[in-house]
Image (cartoon, rainbow, N blue to C red; front, top):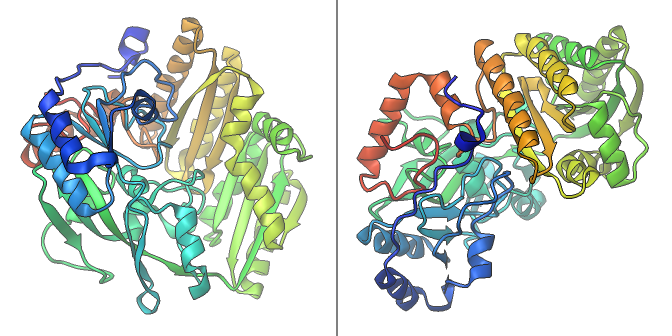
Length: 476
């Protein structure tokens, strides 16, 4: 594998470029109070939810309020060969927004307007700073919703950049399937549009898909057109406890292979259930659990649920608990979405090395069970959650940030997990993205030839390597 576990190599390669005083002066002249060089502001924009803590912050932060602001900031930075790092809400997990080569952060959180809702066509166009919760609040009166739910209240721009997915992906797909068109500021400061509101197109290269998942390395996304969906007539959630993780996983595999159109199916291991109970003041059974949701007509939801309950019973599933009211469903899903914070709270002072993989559904049990056995044997505290309906799961290794041995052990576990997923024809990351942490794994997964092709595209679109450099793959 190309991702060594020695700590010297796990740490990001920091190679800051000079940020001339002339650039800071030019930014302050153009943006006034929208440009900050205050240390507290820069430090806020130099951290995400990854375990990296030793990367210097950017030299300045520009708070963009329009596409023209973004274009002007990129042009000024490009004139001085200075890196530009897009920033949404800072919820990324793999070091995506860290200023490993210095530069400026362009914060698009103030670009937070829903620009148009086309209910008849089931599309919406938003600025990148709109968050997923904000979007759903603004369109709920139309009877429509946006289903992509990565857990955190991430920005739509950030979700586009990392090709996010989440709990609903098993039914509604990921950002890849739900982004129709983009407006992007390229490395030259040019504003380009990709795609249309039409549901399909055969016109030219699919540039939209090129930018979705590019993690800010090819341009800054400034508008996104999305698919939206009718709110289902009926929604029901259920939890079911199991005697083992294997029983829960086998239930999931059979459910998907039977073609049950389940909307969400989340695995939570017994460790995580215990942490969630303590954090969210719940009394869930502290056993491996599936948290499921069914969407459709009342009759369809009932039929789906009965089918899954029968499958679960065949694998020892018990204590089915239904949540049919919005309040009950919200309580359960809020607890699930707070699992990361519950885990952090379970070991005060710890940092979480979060990782995810995704494998074909038929290989899920093999990958997951071997990985659980390894981490149990290691003695490292951890939490495990998974969007297992599409073969995706997440480990969070809870380490003492001041203990190099724990960090090393956690990285070894991550290394073994990713190697296993790739060997089973899966991917090194199902939704977190590559960022800094999985650059070596991407080489193992895609191969040197594919990485060279990506590098060729990067050099063509960003010849000065100013767009979020040092992420996904090396420059040369």
